[in-house]
Structure formats: C-alpha cells, structure tokens
Image (tube, rainbow, N blue to C red; front, side, top):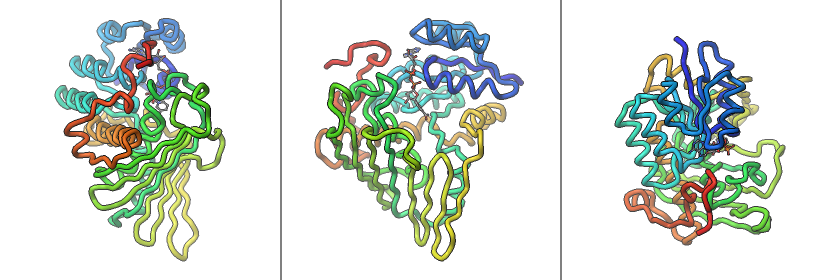
Length: 347
Ligand SMILES: NC(=O)c1ccc[n+]([C@@H]2O[C@H](COP(=O)([O-])OP(=O)(O)OC[C@H]3O[C@@H](n4cnc5c(N)ncnc54)[C@H](O)[C@@H]3O)[C@@H](O)[C@H]2O)c1
C-alpha cells in the first residue's frame, strides 16, 4: 500500500522529512503547503507534488494518509484539529503547542478523532534509547542530567525568544522529554536563565539556562543549556541517567554504558536511521500502541518547559500539578501567536 503524505510548513524540517519519506519505498509526498507560496512551490517541485498556500485546501484536494506539521508551535492546534477531523494521521514537529491549554487541546483533539499521531521527539524512538533502556532494566533511575551546548539558532524566528519561546522550550524540550521517558512525570521545576554572553541586538533571547527537576518517582534531574557556543563540539548534547552502579550516557550518536570494573560499552546509532521510518512502519501496521511520543506525552513535556520559563521569570519553584491545572497567562513564558508566520512579536 502506498502511503501519501502532505508537508505543511515547507521550511527546514519540512524538507528534511520530505527527503526521508521520499527515500522509502511506497511512500509519496503528494503535497507541500506553506504560507509562503514560493517555499511551498520549491519543495513541491522537488517531489512532483501539488502545492498551496492554504493547507486546508491542499488537504481537501489531496486527501493524504498523513500530514506532517512542520510549522511553528502556535500553528499546530488548529492544523491538528482540521486534519484529525478528516481522519488524516499526523506527524507534529515539537514543540506541540505554545501554551498549557493549547497543548492539552491538541492532545484532546488527537484522542477524540482517534488518528495515529506522533510528535517529533525522535530520541524516544531511537535504537540508542532502546539500548539505554535495556541497560537500565528494572534499576530505578535516581539522577538524570541533560545538556545542550549550542550556537545562535540559524532560523531567525527561533532566535527571538518572543517567537521561538527560548532554548528550553524550543530545543531542550527534546532532553526534558527523554528524561521523562526514563523517569516519568515531573513534579517540581526551578530554573534560572542568563543573557550574559551575547548582546540583545544579536540574540533577543536568553543565552543560558540551569534547570532543576524533581520527578514524581523521587528521582532528581538537571538541565543546562546555552546558545553562547558554536557547532562542532563533540558530545554537545545528551542525557546521563544514573542508577545503582550504572551510568548510561545517551546522545543521538550512540549510547555508552559505564559499569564498575568494566570497559565502557558503546553502541553507535545505526547509520541512516530516522524517525520517519519508524512512523511509516506504525502507519502501515496501524499500530497505535507503538507510538512512543503521543500528543498527550508531548503535552506534558512541553508543559515542563513552560513551567521552567515561568520559574525563571518569577524566581519561584513551580509545582507541575498546579501549573497545569491553572496555567498562568504570562506572555513572557510562551511564544506570541502568529509571530513566526510574519506577525508582530512586540508586546
Ligand atoms: N525534531 C527536531 O529535531 C527538530 C529540529 C529542528 C526544528 N524542529 C522543529 O520544527 C519546526 C519547524 O522548524 P524549521 O526549522 O523547519 O522552521 P522554518 O522556519 O525553516 O520552517 C517553518 C515553515 O513553516 C511555514 N509556516 C508558518 N506558518 C504556517 C502556516 N500556518 N501554514 C503553512 N506554513 C506555515 C513558514 O513560512 C516556514 O517556511 C519548529 O517547531 C522546530 O522546533 C524540530
């Protein structure tokens, strides 16, 4: 059976997923949408696909098996509902949504219409994560530490925290989600952010973060990130998980397991692996149970990032339960709706 896919948001990630999909047998990219017609046309041309400015018109016309939402987070909720109502399966790039309420609404819509939906938290599906889980076995994690040493984001709207939401929301959400995959729900967050290294005119964003996490199962976690560095630093992102006499170090390049009295055991990631192969296989098997990054899990993960932003701007320890039950409507912690698609980010 040929699987047909429409790409919505024909930018960097839209192109990356379209390329992955086009390399798979019996998968066709049948349409590309973008609010910028030239971007939609250019990507569609590469794959002999239809193109449109209006994703709704394109979905109605092409009726694909799956829509890939590669748009900024604030566009997702409406796009998810429109596609799910029509029975179209969904791949949604992270972050799922710009606010607690929008994230919960997006997860509700996916569950109401029963479509297959994954969020693009690829670490959950990676074979390197399976290796880490196998090494941990039944040992309860007691400490998790994530880091992301990065540079000024190349995509202009991601650079601006009013539009991109900041590094902990936009990028390190991957690490928070992976920590949650190992240790479960987060109970409390405390975060401090800095902007010491790069002038505001060059980077209208925080340039560093230090985040403390307490998990509901009693484990502790920490996350530190920066945009002040440069690409090419070996091991520039990853997650450590510590259990009794066991350290598991995971990044997309591979997993290393440290045990007392033994050489570290290294398992590299398989060459050419990507999340689209996993999701297409789930679509072919119609296997909702194999979805590891459900919209509901992704909603919880992005709420931790939003809670960290809230902690950083208020200087308080944030209880996730209270934060999610009664989300503060604080514009400093979430991206401005519509700004990434050309709206005005000023408040
Ligand atoms: N999973 C990963 O590892 C990973 C890596 C990088 C980026 N991302 C995520 O992918 C998303 C897209 O990032 P990107 O780097 O491709 O950005 P981008 O700016 O290159 O692409 C986004 C595209 O969406 C278009 N767009 C905006 N609103 C739209 C709408 N309503 N309808 C149709 N098109 C619309 C824009 O014009 C743009 O072309 C971001 O949320 C980012 O966090 C994920």
